[in-house]
Image (cartoon, rainbow, N blue to C red; front, top):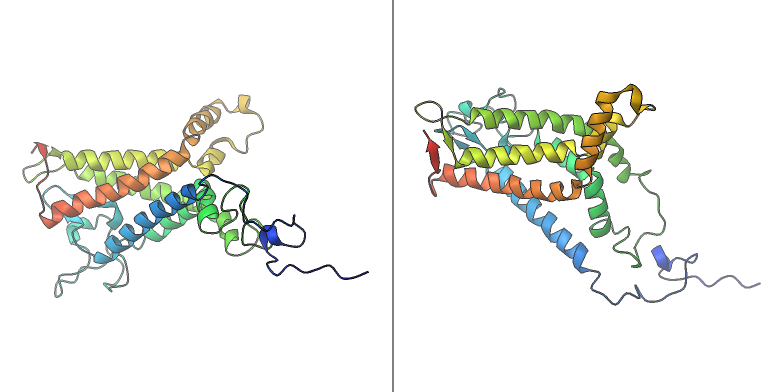
Amino acid sequence: MSAPTSNPQGTGVFSPTRARIKQRTLRTDAWWKSPLITDLGFAAFVIYATVRAFLQNNYWVADYHYLTPFYSPCVVKWNAATQSGCIPEASHFGQYLPDVWWLPYAAFSLPFLLLFRLTCYYYRGAYYRTVWQSPTACAVAEPHAKYTGETRFPLIIQNTHRYFFYIAAVISVINTYDAILAFRSPTGFGFGLGNIVLLVNVVMLWVYTLSCHSCRHVAGGRLKHFSKHPVRYWMWTQISKLNTRHKLYAWITLGTLMFTDFYIMALAAGWFSDLRFIG
């Protein structure tokens, strides 16, 4: 018996054990639009957030105590000689890290927030298609020879999502504290458009965090008898309602984070003044 003919393309749907179809896909619709739009949305946020994190300026409005979430908590030591590092008034939780150009001022929070979103169940589904290409779209050839799920590096890191959820919840508390401190003016209590921007961002961050699948599991995932735990069952049902729109909240919070940071940056840079209602 002659040996089976090897397939030079031998990966994914072109592997020897799959149906021998030469075309990458038989679909006639614009299947590539959805992954392309997702990629562009992710790229816009990543580029903006990276640039802003390393600009290391225009993150604090002293008159109203506005602190952008991209710099919270601000933990890099202030250097009076070079006028760099976290402004002391903006460091609500102390200063611990050295002032070096490659270290973001919010180095205690940004890496964990990135990992929380990177391992998020919705974001996994999105970038598995667009970046990891597994699969790019339904009935579209993928470049991987076989499917290993999340059992090997790097995708095995996804199993740490539940731990990043706890850290993200703590950081949401910090952002809430920052938003409360921002109700100030040079003369005392104050309220302006910046406060509304900060509050909307904090609320949406909490909605996104609490609608997380891990939060839902923490609330009631291990319960065998809901009737014996009415409080946790009620929490589980409310989180489940939020969870149905987790994808929507994931995208909304990317937008509110960028808008909040941009608004505070513009105020700090003096591009325009905050619209004040009180104070």
